[in-house]
Image (cartoon, rainbow over all chains, first blue to last red; front, side, top):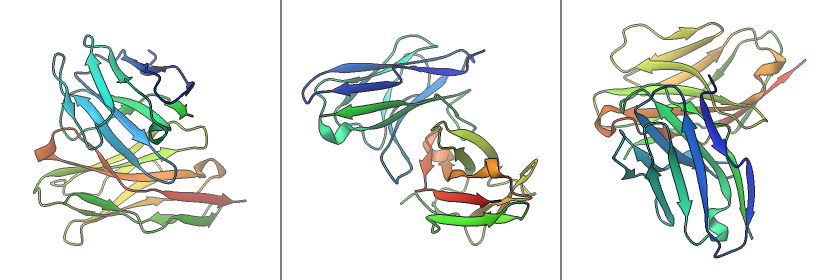
Length: 113
Length: 115
């Protein structure tokens, strides 16, 4: 039972390059989330998927797209990376879309040069 | 506006002593959940404790307790008998029912436990 897994752990991109961050959970959770954490700050919600087949914008969605591939997997895509997207990205999941515990993946450190 | 405020950027505590980390929140939603997460230097986010806004009693989980004062809109985390392994960043977060499962985080408090 791995919980929430994320790949890659670390990535360096050049400005303008694209990449996809992968997230998978094995807890049979319905809801999944993508957050970013900038230095000295708490996490901010980028996008979420309340249930399979739905996605919606969070607080800071600009520059990102998401895909809920199936119940287990939720990917985050940067189409044209910018230095302002240098951050640590966390994926999380919860059983349903309501105020309840979210379980986080280990994070992906992204550096955009 | 929905907001979480953690006013202590950093704190020190002596090993085996208790420590309180402050958290205040702002929401107009009558129903919400409050959470505390721990982030050690390794970077992962570890869930510690949850309090529902209609829960009558303060939540406890082992050495962690949440001092919930609804009228003051505060949800302070109390760690009893601090251990060296408690040194980490601690984040308070809120999830208003009107916003489903979305979490709003504070900026965090860095706790250092001294031997």
